[in-house]
Image 1 (cartoon, helix red, strand yellow):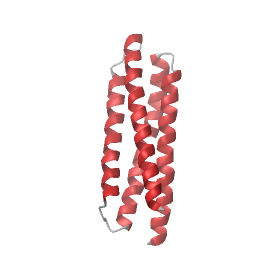
Image 2 (tube, one colour; image 1 turned 135 degrees about the vertical axis):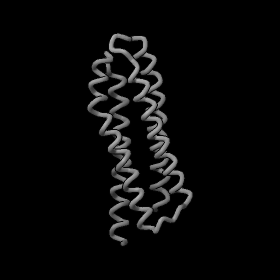
Image 3 (spheres, one colour; image 1 turned 90 degrees about the horizontal axis):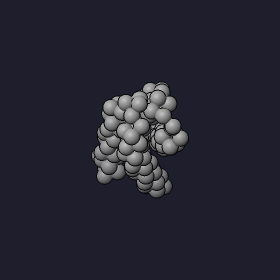
Image 4 (spheres, helix red, strand yellow; image 1 turned 45 degrees about the horizontal axis):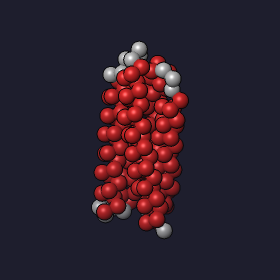
Length: 138
């Protein structure tokens, strides 16, 4: 059982780092996108990766909780709530972009501002939770 728990901690850490990387890549592509069509193509290919990475974090977290016999600690509850917040923020960002027309440059600029705030919130929140998680583990 200890081996499974140790392996899930390593997988969880790598999954959180992958989420940070995915958010960073998304943020960079948003900054560098010149047109709606360019960014839409990117998001159609990249959004499933974002969902997979968030799912990997949640799945490895569930495995760790099962290995601990589902002991709900403050840390676990905070991470569960933050996982739900991350999913909701990504859904809001994707839904907002869905209504931006390919020819609507002004709408795309408004979307960029909203998406930058969402990405910044996701990145900072994930980084804080990750640092907190690492500091507790030691």
